[in-house]
Every structure is written in structure tokens, then in C-alpha cells.
Length: 363
Ligand SMILES: [Fe+2]
Ligand SMILES: [Fe+2]
Image (cartoon, rainbow, N blue to C red; front, side, top):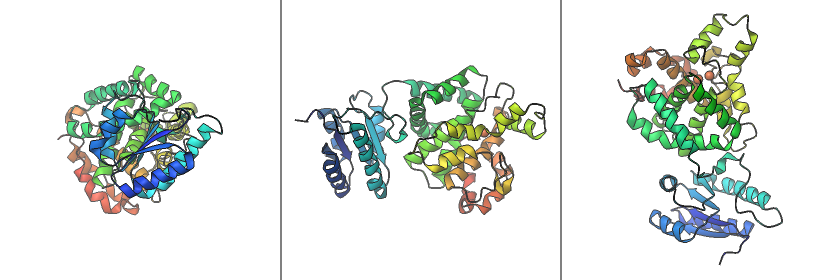
């Protein structure tokens, strides 16, 4: 019988020693109830017969995470934590323990983790907002890019939905995304294209993990959220070209919006400690280019984190795609036209030849 004020935690890991290591620490530090699931085939049985779990921890179990996400009928699961690498176990576990201790205080224990700013503990919300948002993103993007590779977009669908669930937690971000549905904006399709391109490049460069794919999708969704000139311009590239040609010299307000939309996007996630540093870097600096050719600061990107570099590289590609009429889109032609040599001073140098494998648009 579970005591009323005890957390109920389930650990899913096929590695028995890691699992029991975690269970001992959790029981010891939280005096909680911990169950262990050591094989996929036990998962449904355990979850259905011993609900509700307050927290489910998956250690290198992406298969189960995906399965769980599709089983919306399972109620009572408040929070899942995905640990993608056993070397991160101690660190992540300590974060969880600290969080639960803070939530609990010295008194009784609430059954839900209440700090919604902590995006690591993304809730399996019962609401369908993220799915509805995704439906709109997908619908508009398929119209804008009719030759999109269906297989690839279906493969990455869950990462984008997961990122939208993270956005859903923050009302400011959610409201801003929804406001773009009213604009004749390319925000939706451009962000979707950025998510597909950047996640695909992670995959091609052999750097794809569920966690960095979700964060890449999140970065894509946020990076132009503060770019509200879309009504005036068909694409972001068009607006930036206009800025470069001095068209806004008489209107410093507009120049400011364009110049600092990355920085303003990063402010949306200020204080979310669990978001990796590269997300912020990629948001603030997604228009910086090799050899200091970008803006707002003309900073050289050579020492940027690898994920930020992939995001910037994806933006260079997306800019080219967005300049071509959808019917005439030929990704191979576009890729041949781009000068990737500029990225040779960065840590992507050994992977640049692989960019030609990018297959997000059918020829
Ligand atoms: Fe931008
Ligand atoms: Fe953009």
C-alpha cells in the first residue's frame, strides 16, 4: 500500500545495474516508492496495473517514450523524464531530487510537480493544443512546399509536437505562435522547414538524439517568433535584403525589430535552466554568418557550439529554398549553389560533404 504523501516513481531501463543504482538513490533521498521496468514487454503491464506514477524516468528507452506518447488513454502519469545517456544519470537524477524536495518542502507532498517553467519535465498534457498547432504547421507547410519529403516529415513529427508541447506550457509563447495564424505570414512554413532541415542535418551528421532533435525543433519554432514584419514581406530574406539596402533608414523601429528578433526570441526562454546553452546561442545568433558576414553583431561563428552551427547552416539552406518558387524547387540545384566552404573554419568542417545527402524536398 502506497502512503498518501509519497511520490510514486517508475524507472524504465534495460540496464539492471543503472536501474537499481537510481532506485537506491531515489528511495534513499526521497523516501519514495520506486518500481523498475527492465523490459519493454513489461511496460504496459506495470503502468496499467500500478498507476498512478508521478514520475516515469526513461533511461535510453526512446522506444518506450514514443509508445507512451501514443497511449493517451493512460491517465495519472504526470511527468516523464528522458535520460538519453547513462553518463547523464547522476546529474539528471540529482536535478529531479532537488526539484521534488523543493516542491515537497518539509510538509506534505503535492502529487504534481508544479514548476511549469522547468521544461525538462514536459507534461504529457491531456489537452490537444500541441497536436492542433502541429496540424496547422503541417498543413500550411505542405501547401508552401508541396514537394516536401513525406517520409522525413513523418519521421520527425513527434519531435516537433514535443517542442510544441514545451511551447504550450508557456502562455506568452503559445499566444505569440497563435497570433501568427492570423497573419499572412510565412512564419509557420519557414519554422517547419527549419525544424525539418536542422533535425535532418543532425541525423546526417550522426548527432541525432531525441533530446537535441526536440530542442532543434523548439529553436526553429522560436527563432522568428518576434519577427512580426511578415505582413509586409513574403519572406524573412526579403525583409533582410530591404534592411541591407537601407529601405528602413527612415524607420529605426523597423530596423530594430529585424536586427534584434533573435535576441528577443531568446528572452522568451529566459530562466529555463534545463534548456541547453546552444539553444539560446542559436536563437540570438541565427543570422550571424561565417567570417562575420551576418548580423546583428557581425560576429565570427567559428567557435559556436556545433548545434548552433547546424542551425545556422540550416538557415542558409532554408533562405535559398524560400527564394525559389515552390514548383521550381530542386534541392540538389540549391545545394550546389551554396558556398559551404565558408563553414570550413568551424567544427562542421569534416561533415560538410554530407550536406549533399539532405533530402527534405523531393526533386
Ligand atoms: Fe530570423
Ligand atoms: Fe528564420
